[in-house]
Image (cartoon, rainbow, N blue to C red; front, side, top):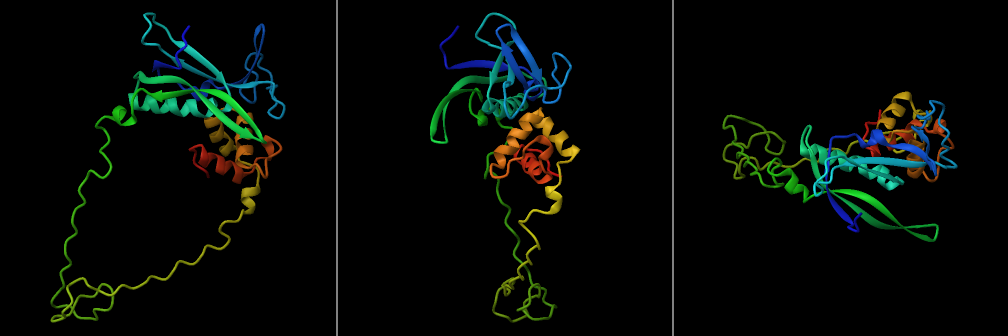
Length: 264
């Protein structure tokens, strides 16, 4: 047992998103483990209702504690939407910095947060995974500093002595004897681009039900249909879909862009 709010950890290769489920625990242990479609313990259909949830979204993170003499992997199990969204990408980032097959150094911490909703203030704790030092230290010399390179100087334009034409037209050479330096040509304002008809408005295609391809890519990120539906409702509080089947292509496209997926 420890009272420390942060621990040094080593993170082995893992896919945290693949270990996220909707789970129901009782005094005798786990009663349900659902991926949004199938209840994995019984093989039957998922019984976790996103509108009246009795299951918690559960995220599992495996770490090693380098300060302990024992060998073995420790598992952190946490519930809550904040951890479900943050731990997967934080773990993936640290593992990418560590390189293929490597152990990532990090710090596992408990962060206290405050949220105000409908006039009520709620305090809650969220487990977070941080880099052991700064990201610059983790990257080392693999990434050059911003602004460190020299911008090459552009060559001075040279007029063609044999060229003729008006110096007031872009691209023409300066006639011989003209007191203006070469390249000192009049600037011509390009015509403004015409506005795209119908831009900014929803097209009928966006109002169609989300495609199977969109659902497949969304499930790679959020792992379960209830979690996808929850995130879509968060992004569209004024027009939340009543069910997963009511999610439109436009709503799913915005979710995929928000979650790093490619909207098609």
